[in-house]
Length: 148
Length: 74
Image 1 (cartoon, rainbow over the protein chains, first blue to last red):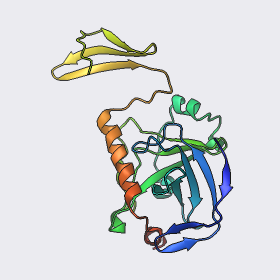
Image 2 (cartoon, chains in turn orange, yellow):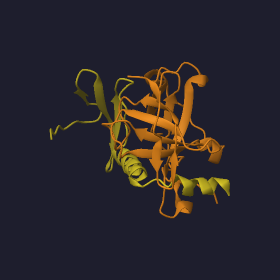
Image 3 (cartoon, chains in turn orange, yellow):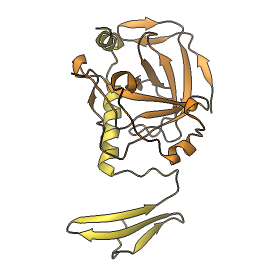
Image 4 (cartoon, rainbow over the protein chains, first blue to last red):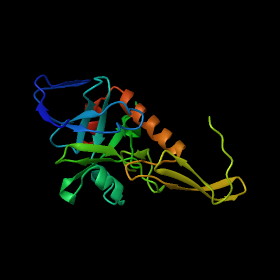
């Protein structure tokens, strides 16, 4: 199932309430590791100025992940998208693709990390996605969000 | 759990389209070759489990977006 919609009541977040946020639902056929049973995630802007979004499960309201454009923090971040993933996500050109990384927020925000080992790959035209696990060990699943 | 003994270059089939081949054994390390359809993701288990754990940790935190936002605005 693929569709997008407008949240009418906003998303309630600790420390703020945001009204009328546009959000797009992406379908993850295999869920993501740890949440294999969840298939639909709404991607919502959190702040127009920041390279971040909220990825919220449609099926389980308790589950939401903060994601960030990894290239905004690690401009040298680079890997090859396997042909199998391109086929799985019906990717035909670079214009179809968006890459995001999940943030693990630490109680000490400065120690928050981003998962560079398992990026989210989205086909923004087909509204489908998957969390890819990179096979080489170049990138950490707990890379610092704030670079020293 | 089904237990099968295999020698080097012997393989097992899982269903009709997944083949796991023992390529070689050196000491306590077994080298495996895996033939599977493209849509089947293959991972080292400890890596998959680490990503599961990381995702769960990322999802269970009450997200204080304001606090994280501050970091970017510094």
